[in-house]
Structures are given as structure tokens and as C-alpha cells.
Image 1 (cartoon, protein in one colour):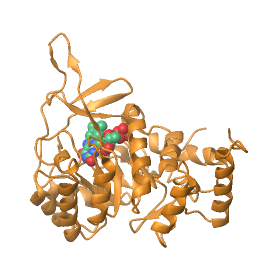
Image 2: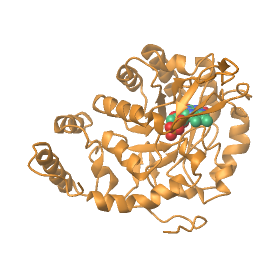
Image 3: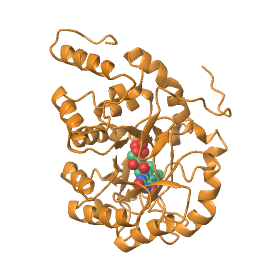
Length: 359
Ligand SMILES: Cc1cc2nc3c(=O)[nH]c(=O)nc-3n(C[C@H](O)[C@H](O)[C@H](O)COP(=O)(O)O)c2cc1C
């Protein structure tokens, strides 16, 4: 089916979502660093096809990033070691955000720094912009010597930074976690206790390739961050593991490339999802998935995508989440009785009495 990419997108009642004080048109947004600040993509299609725009990491001063080569292909994925190249927060606030705001899509700014003070300074500078709806704290970049993953790898350091940033930020704070840790649940709980409003899971997985003729690592930085479909099972398992232990929304990211992948992340417990590396294969991937999802929801027998939220978990987990989250409607959807019917179906399927209608 052809899609008129240049037309403004229609409303997506079956995919829309409210979280972080933002009315998301739908649950999909680009992952930081794979979409720039949106300007190149605005030449391809109307950015209102996005649920939100997530920017490249922004630091206090401009950064040139690492030396080259900074990317390498791997089976079902890629390695990158860009090293947080960006024009610095002043340019972002004064020049880039006012331009991008004109596209009419909620903006989430990804924030990075070498130490706590730099993170806090960037957040203070962003407070001056009326265009920022949330910040995503990148405590998980594996490609810089100072900051980044060093915060994300330690629950205490991650929590302290989150607390400091929360004290400063006038908008909700999403904390983006690293998969390169022993226990991601411990870090997730620590940053939630420190005030994080949401969690993004996951950043890239540390990896490397070696040029056997040169007998040297391919990447200038030696190691890089692995992304793309190769890490999808890792990302999915982290979302699934963290979901029962936190009350804040989870944003799933890692290897998502199609509508089926989106559904898998929602079933694991992600309220929203981000798409990164897939943009390098198909720059139209988000509008294409948004276009395809309603057909898939029909096939799965649900009206709203969030009827599937967390549904890959056992019933005890879903019940506990409802209690834990108090008034927050985790099992959202237009009709709670539909939820009950689904819970019953879930139980029946588990008990082996029935197969799902879409099996
Ligand atoms: C080229 C490239 C640059 C990235 N830059 C950032 C960044 O600036 N900040 C950040 O938090 N994550 C960054 N990431 C990580 C992605 O946002 C995402 O978490 C990761 O790639 C997994 O998703 P994917 O498999 O869909 O790409 C980058 C990833 C790639 C491939």
C-alpha cells in the first residue's frame, strides 16, 4: 500500500499515549543519535509522523567526537563510536530547538556530560528553552572516556546524578540505562528512587571488530556500541526484567525494525519505543511501522496497543503492578472490562485450555 509521505499524518487513536505530561500521537520515536536533530528527516517527510523527536546527545560545549573510523558493520547490526559529537547546548537552545519546534512534534533532548557538573549545566541551559518537553539523561554512552557509561554502571553514581538533575530540571527526566552492567534491575530501582520520571532501556552493547590484515581494531576507539537487530533479544530481556520492579514508564529501545518488534516490546512492558539503527536501512521506518500497526492490532484482536502492555508477564506480575502503581492506569485502554477479558484469555492460554485466536 502506498503512503503519501508528504501529507500530514492522521490521528492514531489506537496508538496514542499520555505519559510525562506529553500527549504522544503514537508510541514511536527515533532513538538518540540516529536522527540528528530531525532536520535531514524533515526533508523526507512531515515530522508529525513521529510520536516525539529525541535529539542527539547534547553536552555543555561543542564536541568533535572520536577519530575515524567511527562505525563498522556487524552481522545484523553495527558498531558505533561517535563519541558524542554535537554543537554544544548553547547552539542547540538558541538555533536548533526553535527551528525544530516548528515541526510541531514534542522534543526530548538527550543530555550527556563528562562529570556531574556538566550534566547539571546542560540541564540548566535547557531550562531556558520553551521547546524542551523532557530530557533523556544519557548515563550509558560506551564511547567516551569520562562520564557516560561510568555513571550508568554504578547504581549509587547513577542515583546521585539523577537526583541532582531532577533538582534542576523543569521538565520530566528520563534516564537511559546501559545494558553493560551486572544487574540492570538494581540501577533501574536506584534511579527510580532518585526521582527518574521514566527509563529508556537500552543503550548500545560494548563490542569490537578486528581488521585481521592490519591486526588492529577496526574502530579508532578500539571498542564501540553494538546496535540493531543483533541486540533486540538483549533489549527485550532487559525491559522484561525491569518491568515488574518499577512503577515509572519504560521506553524500549534496541533493534526494533518492524511492527512485530514494537508489539514484542509492549508485551514485555514498554509503554513507548524508540527506533535507532533501522533508520540507516530505511529512513521511512517510523511512518511505515505506524501505518502497519493497526492492521497488526486487528490480527492480534486488540483495539488499543496498550491492551497488550506487559501482557507477556504472568498474571501475578500484572496484578502486582496495578496495585503498585495505584491510580496510574498501567493496563490502559478504553475499556477495563476488555482488560479483564484479556486476563481471562491469558490465563486460559497458560492453562493450555485455549490457543490464541491469532495462533
Ligand atoms: C550512530 C549512533 C549514535 C548514537 N548516539 C547516541 C546518543 O547520542 N545518545 C544516546 O543516548 N544514545 C545514542 N545511541 C544509542 C541509541 O539511541 C540506541 O539506544 C541504540 O542504538 C539501540 O537502539 P537501536 O538498536 O534501535 O539502534 C546511538 C546509536 C547509534 C547507532
